[in-house]
Image (cartoon, rainbow, N blue to C red; front, side, top):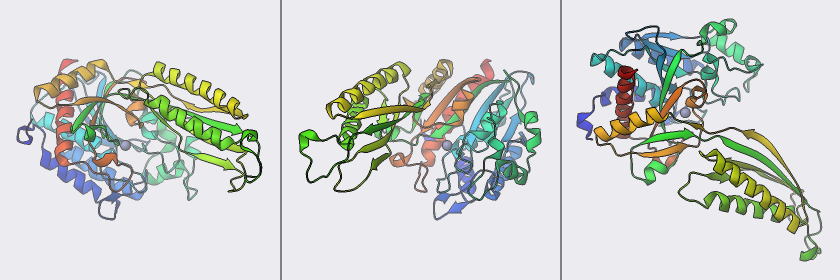
Length: 417
Ligand SMILES: [Zn+2]
């Protein structure tokens, strides 16, 4: 499709993204809008103004979520919700989350301008604290409205010792009234989120937009290998119990297992490793390292994990090491709704927008929503796959094409149900 035939207003969307990037701006292109901060509040107020300008009824709830609502023919019907987040990492970019909120607003405003009357209410949401960097736990706002906060979350502190409770109060929320901001079960029918890919797949395929098939849940393991320390200058090679050599072989084994089927989206990473005693002339006695294994296909992930465990057992036996594996996180992948993906496939075909289908490695607000309703996600290409960095960049052409697909998907869903 050509940019001239867009239904959404590319210029308006671009202007809003640029204006929001001015709030909490760092350097030329970066953004620091930590959740529940002064800058976050300014951002929320800005977007709230645009929601009202678009004819939505906007409110800030007690979790700090911003919610704009367009009434439907049947106000009692379950809601079609669209959105993402506008809080950022301390050294973040202009597009992460933002394009999902402003793209959603653009979609709904376009709907209104085209006199499309949705059957059900539509809500555009900027969720509070998706990033989780300030209080070390993310997806706060979205879990909040779904009644899924955990014990003690309000008592978590940031690096200055401010509790989330305090930060909520300073933001203008009342943490004693959180219950009032929860959504009753069944009140949300579906959720749509557009987000930058934060990875290189679309760029590699030279495509602006992708349809997400699901969010892969990570398996996080900690592996400890133990051997025996000795002098690097004297212990003969056959007598060594070198834990680092064992770890090196396990790392390679993981890499090979995850790369076996290059058409599959499996990824495996050892991102952290500690060596004891960590001295140049001592044979390493103990090595502790992390494993991050992700796949959209849980059975395939289980099979790879099984084989990795076998390899660890073989390698440690070969090097006369003992081992311990502990599991830190084991989330299942959450698949996007096949119905919503079909609408996206049809709508992109109609406008001649070539897409590919891909999984999401990172979490998004959609992950929490996936437990209560159908969800669909659109990815927009980002340069070099860079994100959580001021260098994060997507073109406004690509963002507009994503927003157009979001708009068309929302229209279909608003008319069909
Ligand atoms: Zn994000």
